[in-house]
Length: 258
Image (cartoon, one colour):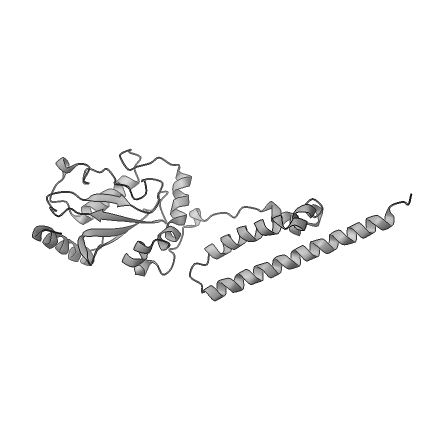
């Protein structure tokens, strides 16, 4: 339970943040517990985190502002261990360096600054820029699957953010797709088509790719898209099987009789 001093200070800070929002950061306390705050940090421009949304929490002790909070980032980022306490000079890892004058805004801006650095500390991990960009691409979908995120930030769980062009994934070519649509490769894929392995793999990959790009459409629309893809696949396989049958008939008629 928050002390009178903590309640007064955190209430004052929340009102101040509402009047002057923190750049690239949204934050608010739980209505039921003013000591438990949540934030969403937007990846800073010109960094591997640009385009990502990172959900996390600040947990203040009842003695605040005379004791520091714990800081966690829940969304995978490639910089911090998900949902693990982060070591900062203004976190509960270092109560001796805590300054009671530091505000919620100061803490979150410090976290944003520390995030784009390479300094190691408890709660951090080392990954490549490509891995960080991959986490940025997936961050909205990860947050959208988190019940707490949708509870605290329902306004952010409506539609995905715009992903910068440099973070857009380039679809990988499917060798299964090429073998089904290219007549020159039809013979080599004959066994796969007959057993249904290729079609199963193709449907699984394409459905996941297409439906992941349409998170906000209705369930009916998703079923319609799925049905159309399956119909298209059936027509492609039928066409390939007909060509294979014709090839077999031609081979039988042209082969010399013994």
